Amino acid sequence: METTFPRLLLQHASRRPDAAAMREKEYGIWQSLSWAHLARTVEHLACGLHQAGLTRGEHMVVIGTNRPRLYAAMLAAQSLGAIPIPLYQDAAAAECVFPINNAEVRFALAEDQEQVDKLLEIRPQCPQLGAIYFDDPRGLRKYIEPGLVSLDELLAAGEVFAGQHPQFYRGEVEQGAPPARPRAWCTRTAHCSIARRRAPSSTT
Image (cartoon, rainbow, N blue to C red; front, side, top):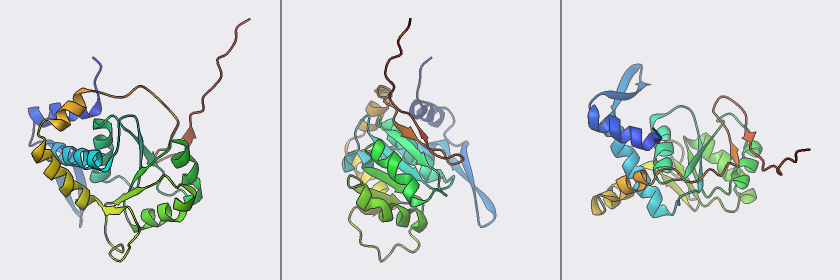
């Protein structure tokens, strides 16, 4: 049966809300994130991104290591019918320019100061990149770049919106994924892969 990751997330959150969805080691101790907590985080991120202007069929860059809130942000983008593009965290700044411009990316999520600096460095070459969200605030307190916002602020705004519009998130998830429109993607374990449009092949 056709489904989406956000729909599966809601199913797990309903059927086994207290079970561990993810585990992350912090200070040497494994911390568990329940399905219910993950679903709430994704909902609030999705509502925050909707308020910020992320639209169905649009692309959003995510750059960093394997962190729970980065995966939650990718699920949030998918919940709105947007397409997350995870970029290789060790790629040089210049290597990120083409996928960002090729996919017309306006929204980016960076794990920490290193990734924020990378995005700010190439921003003059990517003029449409208006919003940069960051997860880890260390080293970023004195940054005053326009459009640079913490993930905590996005979550807080999304939580307020979700409380005012309790049916919004599920309605977006039920709409499913947008029509396929591949342009570019990267993974955290491989360099960028580019999907180019090809002319129809002729037969003889």
